Image (tube, rainbow, N blue to C red):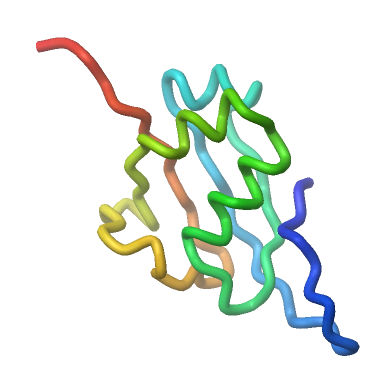
Length: 98
């Protein structure tokens, strides 16, 4: 299980747990189909992206930079969207084809 960077405050923020599902090139770059991630309460999609890139390295960071995201099957248009506990985030890299 991966954890987002810890807060430097003396108190520990309650954690939310989200499931991240990777598709196509994102799955290859992450090396897994899905994972459960603990993030601080109030974490955003942008916070999650930062944590995932730090955990998985440059290959996934590049994919995440161009990816689209679904939060509980709804397109995310603002990466400042807060992640609720128990959410499912789908990482969709750009697809080519016709």
